[in-house]
Length: 101
Image (cartoon, rainbow, N blue to C red; front, top):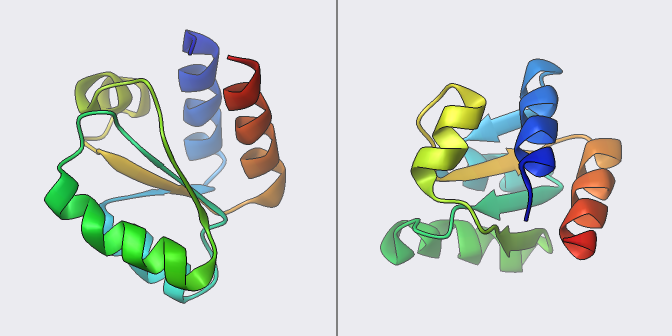
């Protein structure tokens, strides 16, 4: 991974296409809004169960990124361990960046 991804996630947040929090992200998958879900590498496995279940049920890609909750929170200016991307263009670019890393 590189800091380019964190910068891009910040841009995604400023554009209004990023949501955070396990319950909020799970609800957005149920509402067919979240297209991609990313979790920090130290996000609680217990908290991730809800998100993983919704991702499996609604066929949403769930990736663990190589950043801690602290690094992700610092980049986004908000405490978070799991985030959802609600725009297809941003989601596609993030997946491309993850493949290239």
